[in-house]
Amino acid sequence: MIANQFKEKIVFDGLIYLVVALMFICFLVLSTFPGWHHEVDDDGSEREVKAFPSQMSIITCLLLTSTSFGFGLMSALWQHINSSATATMTEILTYGAISGRVGGVAMALGWLSTGLIAFTCIWLFVIILSIEFIRRLTDED
Image (tube, rainbow, N blue to C red; front, side, top):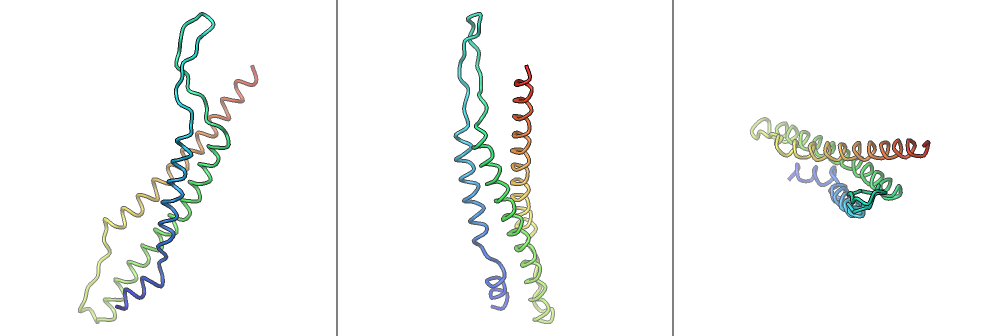
């Protein structure tokens, strides 16, 4: 009962739901990226071309992902601290009669998901830099 009260007062589960909602919105914005289409060259041959996504949509994705990463990092950290503190508190309050352990798989899943969001955030930033670099190269010619 004490561990449950501790969990309810320390951890706010709404951050996890907020992370999921923000990443879902990011996937919806990513689905607006242009696909492959056919163009005709000067010599009359067809080739497949993929246009760059709009600057607004890719920056929106980066902002959503970075916000989601911040909330996910905070949530994973709180979950990790809460699990460790609850296990320790339960063992101390029962004078060692009850032993608690933090589930390694649950912690790994929490930190892995936060790491994947960080990877996505870095990937989107690299895409923005790459598109900007290509646009600068083509504008100089």
